[in-house]
Length: 472
Image: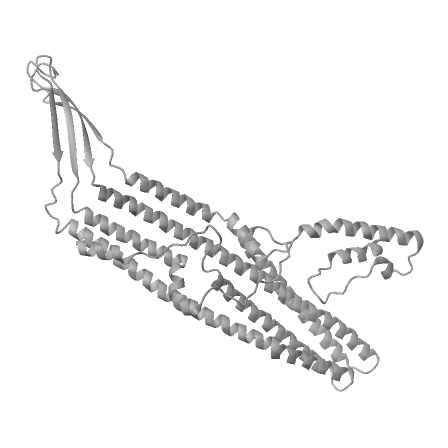
């Protein structure tokens, strides 16, 4: 029974992804001696197994790159953290735009502490029980600037959210592509390993017939062991790549990957990088930081005009005396603006200049980095096309020529193995080169979040900084 069930299992588990895999024969073909009831039983088992396998294969839909990115964004906890930061800043902006809370003031004035009226609240005409309210009148300009400062913080958190989304999409794409090309390398190795098994059979047959040497047999076995070792290394790389992908979207060990995306098109135009990369999330974060610094400079400028405080109080005296009402105004005396308010404003303006310089320098560095990546991507595409057009066909023809010469007795097995090893090296280099091109494509294509509903932060207006400087 074990012998009968083996072909059934093979027919189910053989992956259809690799074109070189030979289809397993049906049990009746594998065992032509099965007749009558036994044949009927085997066919029934095969039909039942295939029927059970249909929903399983349907459930394991190939994982596309876009689906992997969608899952990664849904699974991420960084985005809710940024949403919480945005909410916190906006709530603080609403609070900062209000007047300060009034101050309730309670007290006893002129309480005697000795003599016949000691500690009496009603005997002395100067003793008063006082209750009052003091309110700081913060000018609307200051309150608006304080609220604006926290609104800029919210916008900065929003830009950071965009940067997080872009990073998730980019890193997920790189992990997906690493998985895809690791499995592509495994496919190349498996194809060549299958050919190596045939060469072992041929070498052993030629040796038994006296047309080959024992060295050829050992060479064929050595090539097979080499392919097995390479397959083991590639298997480790596949597991590592799957682990990296699982970090973003969860367990993917049993999920097949869909076809690769089109790697010949990117969203960026190298001639318009100066304007396109202004909206890059990381640059937008620095732009919002500059806006925060400019707003703080304007707030420091507004602080050169002091806020007044108004106080009203009611004083109750003894029953023989009249009650009293008092009111007053408190005005801070900025008697040393040269060494206090002016220096604070100068500090804030310097921080605004620092933030602007950091943004401009980061933009220049980013433009240079992206241009370099585009050049490398274009060069990689050119080289990959050369491999498809010339290098791989030449290596394949060399292998065919070596095989024909070996079959005709004009070359030994070593020459054939050398040609085949050259072909496998060329194919692996082509896959590795395409993997590099794909990684560059992923880094260039997912610089910014492009999904619907995702915002894109802008750049600060330089007029605000100039206005603060002119006020100084």
